[in-house]
Length: 239
Image (cartoon, rainbow, N blue to C red):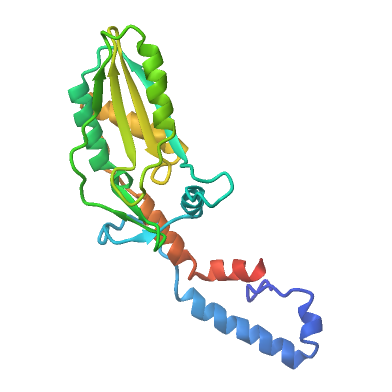
């Protein structure tokens, strides 16, 4: 085991009770290892050469899609991130331009889902996104209206095959602006929301932005390649 780097389970001594049978099994494994190790898995790397070709969904994305199905128990609902920001002195035109730069920066904000193929695709660009605006500064009961708009947003189920899988609306009050942000979690997980908002702030204030490195698509393709690796196959065989 130490010299050949081969695990020899105790059960093998019962399954291959003679020296000949046992040695044949050892040589078979050596041949498999030599063949598999020739296919060394390259490290995770940035590869945007075929950026707009479809790539697989992960398990969570598939589960979110199933949750949209009305035939499922507790289904017919989307998994999404929703937040409201109270902003004072915000320049909505500038914010809108900053958000469009965020869309251009993060490919997953330009991604749609093919439900039939269970795959996803990044689009080169989407139409300029306009933040819907409503002026509530002259409405007496603006808060009740905002509650109604919030409830409508929380019941939204976006079509995963159509862009965009997010929405942003601004409600202008006399002293501040309330921003409603809705993002479908098919394209963005919980921890990524903070990353998006951070980039939005940086673009809004024209702060330096580092180039985007490895993206979600790179990771998903790496996972697919990993399934052909010796380590994966050994683990699959074990479990």
